[in-house]
Image (tube, rainbow, N blue to C red; front, side):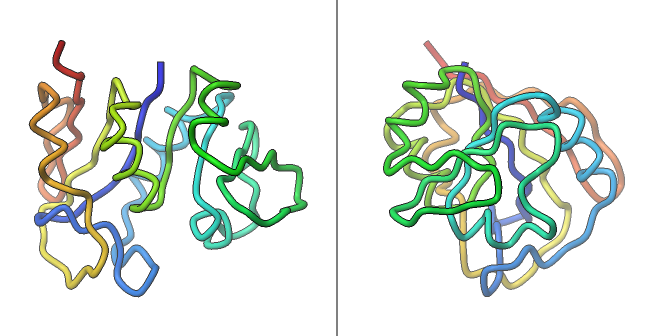
Length: 152
């Protein structure tokens, strides 16, 4: 199953100037717990933004036209990556998220919704969420974690 994991603010903003403008230790732990010992697929900019990349205890795959060292497997397209790894997590960035959702590649999503507004300039496309049923997994004061299952 191809899954997507993300964190967004109230307006589905993902980043500002290429960086996540909030810091949630709970979400980092959740991300780590869900993606540990699995295959993660990301865009090149997301890979380059990760301190001490690649992510440990995961198979790191990067969608890029460049060749990246650092113990990662590179693919030119998302289609090539998911053909080789049909059970994986798509972990960003926005361009890869929106492309995967537009192509109906994703069957399942875990999205942490930050209960605040920031000034993002990169967004998850709201139209894609209508293709999924939503279940709240955890509600806290400053965030909500939701599970999304693709509608049949």
